[in-house]
Image (tube, rainbow, N blue to C red; front, side, top):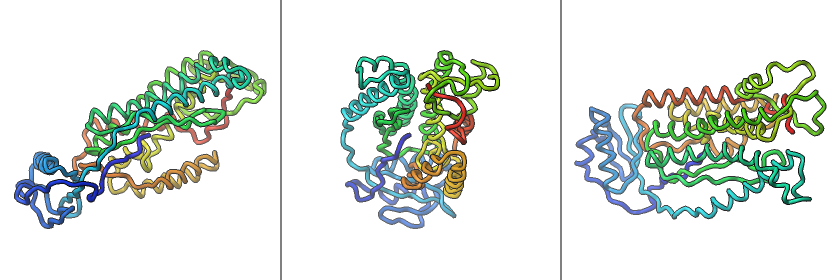
Length: 362
């Protein structure tokens, strides 16, 4: 996940203002307000758009470009003063998450760290699995953002005393505007793609350590649903199970299952989730209506799992609005469109209507 913390406040600082003549070389101006320009960017559009970006950047302004009926609009803002990131917070949260996932992993393996703290060592496989997936997901966002000139923080991990996971995931903060719709797709897809690629071998290793049992043999087991990719990996490992048989998941396999589940949640095409970034770039003006449709579908999926309406409510609380990129005019490249399709394929492979209902957890 990558919440946007970009600066858009025109009163947040000082700055210059380019001469109207410098702007008029590249744009036919019909309205010239202090923080808003209307008109039409001259042809060739790509060249003059790049020139305007340079003009406003030289003046110390943040310029947002978007198409409007009959032309183009430029909204101007001053960049906010950004405090240096407090990386000790990232470190403390990461260490706390290591501890919480070690605890959960040990409990899943049948040990009680409260009675014997040294039993935490038995939680290493689960902790490595889940942190490897979450960490690779967020670091992919981080490096993609930095490569595209976006100021992003290192990952913030979220430790929680949840007996199944030990963590609520992780996120990075985007501290400056994303430069274009294409960059929005690349940063948004990078995390789920890399996290998915890490989750596949983690799951395969975990399934190799899992075993088939008779249904009801696993005392205290929690039934789990199966995404398409998890089912394919399970079939590759165990084949088609006979009636009355089930898979008792090793903690590493459960880490992979969680990785796929988190990937699907992040790829939901709504709000400021990773999928929401892609939906913004691809759908344009239709994104708001589409967002409400997605929320409605999540509410209906409450027939299978009550967590979906809760997730829909969380997305609605945090808002369906999406911060615009600086350049909302330049169309997506072929590579960006391919990445958007890749994101859709991964969502299909990892999504499960009923996350809790089929396989079993040790």
